[in-house]
Image 1 (tube, rainbow, N blue to C red):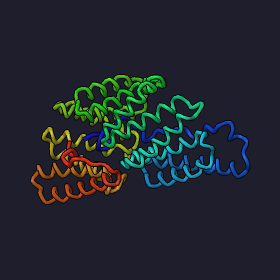
Image 2 (cartoon, one colour; image 1 turned 180 degrees about the horizontal axis):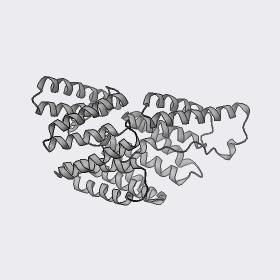
Image 3 (cartoon, rainbow, N blue to C red; image 1 turned 45 degrees about the horizontal axis):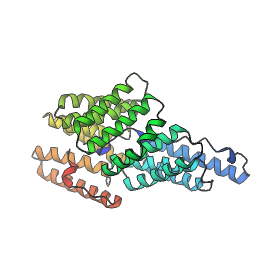
Image 4 (cartoon, rainbow, N blue to C red; image 1 turned 120 degrees about the horizontal axis):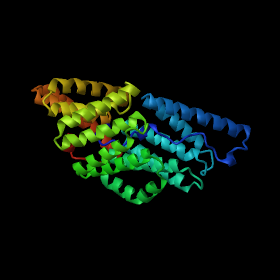
Amino acid sequence: MKMRSVCVCLAFAVVQLPAADPEPAVAAETSASHDTDTAWGNFIRQADASHRDGRLPEAEDAAKRALVLAKRFPRSDPRVPASYYLLASVYRSWGKCAESRSNYGRAVTLILKLPDAKPRYVFNAIVGLIGEATECDDVAVAQKLYRTHAAALQRLRSSPSDDAKILSLQGCIARGRKKYAEAEDYYRRAIEILEGSGAPPAYMAELRSSRAVMLSLLKRHTEALGEALSSIALLESISPRYLTLPSALNNAACTLAQLGRKAEAERMYQRALELARELYGEDNRNTARIMINYAGLLRDNKETPAAEALRKNGIEAYRRSLVHDSQTVDVEDLRK
C-alpha cells in the first residue's frame, strides 16, 4: 500500500501559496476592508498552524473562514486562489478526494488567470492538482492533467526540488498503470536529486516511502524495508504526529509481513492504525486501508474473528468514502 494509503507523490499537503502578497490595488483600503484583510490573514495562519499540527477539523474550519473573506476581494486578488489552495491541501491530507479536487481545480483556474502570478505559485498549484488525482486512484485524470500541464511544469520549474516533484508525479502515474519498475526508477531519480540539496525532510521521507512500495511490489523486500524505515525516521524527526506518518508505518508493516516478521508487522500496524484514527478519524479512506491491511495479517495469524471484524469495518468505511467521492474501486485493489 502506498503513502497516504494510495500513492503519495510529495508532501504538498503542507505547502501552500503564501498569503501575504496582496495586489497593489488592494493597498488603498477602507477601514472595513482593512479589517477584512487582517481577519483573512489571521484565519490563514490559524489554518496553516492547525494543518501542520495534524488538527484537521480546526484547519478546515479556519481555511473555510478565510475563503469566505477572500471572496470579498476582487477575483484577480491572489488571496482568492491561495485560500482555495490551502483548503484543498487540508482535504488532501484528510483523504477527502472530492473536496480536495474541487478546491484545487478552482485554485488552478484562478491562478492561471492572474496577470503576474509568481511562477512557483503556479507550479505548486498544478502539482497539487495532479498529485491529488494520483492519491485518489484516478490515474486517467492524472495522466490527462499531466499531459495538459507538462510543458508549463517544465517552464515554471526553478530548483532541484521542482525537478524531483515532476519525477515523483511521473512515478505516481506509472504506479497507477502498474509499471512498478518504471515508477521505482522515477522515485530513485527524484531521491538522488534531493540528496544533499537541503530539501525539507518531508520531501525525502515521502519519496522514500513511495519507492519502498515499488521495491516491495518488485519483490525486493529487504531494500524496501530499509527505505520504509528511513522514511519513518525522517517523519518522526519532524513530528510524532506528522500527517503522512500513518501511511509510512503501514508501508513498513506490509513489508515486515512479507519478510515473515509478523510480530514486528503487527506492532507497526497497531501504531499506524492508532495514529490514523487520531489524525483522520475512523470513517476515513486512509484509516480504512490500514484496517484492511492489518486484518490481512490477523487472518494470516489465524486470528479469524478479529480479522473479519476489522476487515468488515475497513471495507465499509472505504466504501462510504468512495460513495462520498463518487468513485468506484474493486475491493481486492485495497490490498497491497
